[in-house]
Image (cartoon, rainbow, N blue to C red; front, side, top):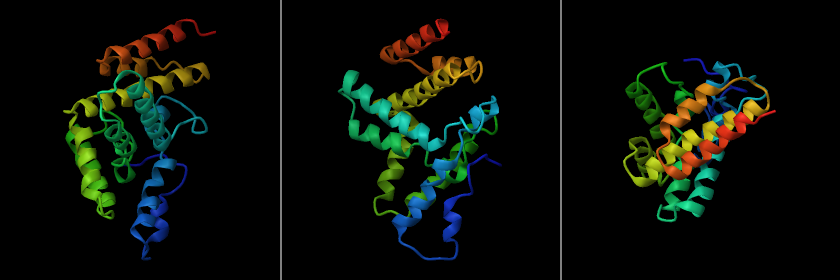
Length: 200
């Protein structure tokens, strides 16, 4: 599956060469810095304005930190930070697969293969894989929260793009609306809708 990126995967520079595992992992996750979020490109956001997966990951992690500190002290903040930082590692090799391009089972299989390949290089790789799997399963309080934060970040980014006059991104607000179950997070979405209604 072809993905639009800023440049080729950095790990290709190490083909046929031996290096330290941490260097190899850095070259692998470096790809997330150049992998565009394909859903934005699909709706016409120009490449020069399109966020990368790594930028999304940063947004998710910071939102989780700030919102957990303010409203959800019962959640395990360390686990939230790990989930935020690691949840997109499946896209290193699978790419940013947009909804409807394949079944969820096939998407999960490709992404799991990716995280296994990357985390196998690290001494605590099984621990990181367990965190990724917990996020994917969405069964714990932390995983459910992070699933919602993942969508909330998308809604917030859609708001930024609309304020930059890059299109009507109602479909992303609708997707965020369907995903959010937590009252405090829905309050943020409601505030975004008020911003949309009063945009110049």
